[in-house]
Length: 313
Image (spheres, rainbow, N blue to C red):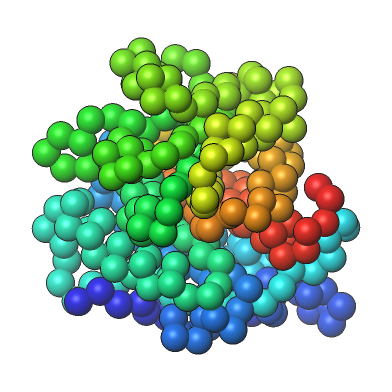
């Protein structure tokens, strides 16, 4: 049986009464009550599908901790709206394979999408993208904007991995795909050709650095004809200096400021139907700065502020 379990007590970290933080406004809630909120958080503490170094199972807790201490005010948008935390996906019996894990997570994701609240999934490894986004395929055409150093369209093989979620989505009927922040020398030619042959868009990290607004325009052009858009942030899209706590940190990535600006632009998209932050792996980051979790938490804050306000980025 698949369930959602309360795993975090939200409270702000500031003693200043004027400092409203996410820790003060996020409320614990059930799926049945999610329609009373603008957005709903769901944790997915799994990393068994990671190709490289594990640690993303601890991502949801770290993202919540950093988000709790983040102030709610954006200078252009003002404070965010109401946010619920539905808890972490849990199982009474552990799934035997990644495919079974995805099936069970999908049962929860379907219920979250059916609720009248914007879903924000906290990963967890990138294999969760498939069950998180797949329920939207039943509601009409779907496009995905993937902020990632990699394309993640590997062959599924015997069992899905963190490198195969978009191949799975394509196989299930994905209509449009754009990868923003892809890095040179991180993707095999066969997978780049796979995306190109299907009309997908690839915007490299260099191109983001030249013009992040143009990068978002290209991504939106790629998903122009679909009914719904799902946005994923794999934190390895950031340069290793900004996000060392990921499975595959490499140099040459985009900056946090570029990511936040692009998410604010996408957050205003009327067709936006879901959002996730994946591959936050706190055990892989040395020291106490928690840069990776902080970047992921602020990515959530930026997107929600834009979505709930309609303010200019």
